[in-house]
Length: 320
Figure 1 (cartoon, rainbow, N blue to C red):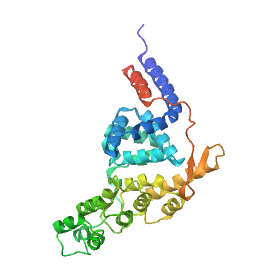
Figure 2 (figure 1 turned 135 degrees about the vertical axis):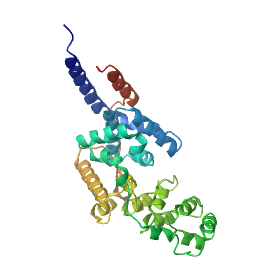
Figure 3 (figure 1 turned 90 degrees about the vertical axis):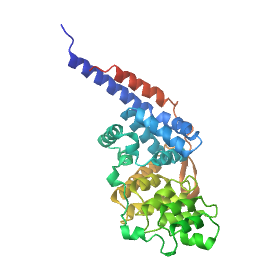
Figure 4 (figure 1 turned 120 degrees about the vertical axis):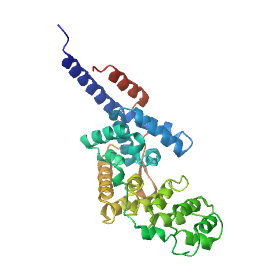
């Protein structure tokens, strides 16, 4: 008698489901060490490349467990997890970087399991725009210097004349803004001014988000999150860094995209839930009353690479 092929497939599927359930339970304990290994790399582009390579290779359930664990740690005050999220979202758009098949599988799994915070990381290209600006607006590149050429403005964006630098902050050409961001005479309040400007060229806001010197600054992230012209994926990446008053402002701001407001409300709800949990290991209060948790006594941490190999081994053995 020939073996029942459908029975073999069902048995394998059941075993794979058990494996995935086990990984879902084990993964949270590994997230912290995964974050530490990523942050040990010297710069953001390298960290982003490593993250993308891992997510491309990991099976969808393992990716979901990793990302959900990272977002959960962010809600609980883990600054390292916040930095890794910025590294990951600096690759725009994330879904395109991972490839359609992987991104689609992860998006659908996140939606199926009601992990909307993860699903939002994979917004489609048409959803990435903030408030649109018309071509006529963009063509008027600098109303403070209407008669100066692009070459002249770029040259002075590298220079030291404070009066000219102040007027160049209003420039709508991202090439000028990129040079300003590199200028040692530019300070944080200047960058916040660029990030908060409205209306503005969204490409200028992308330049701010991608700049390694300025995106770690809290007020820069606040300005980007609160600007309706900020591309949606960038606004979402900045939200987890916001303290409660700013997060409440975003949640109630009718000028922002609904998906940004919804995400802010979800973060508020999750933070409130964590604050109400008496078992959370609160360590101290940070600047502005932000709760910082002592997460050093986590369960024994496992290895995401080992879990990935386990799933790969099961998939190799899957009956055709």
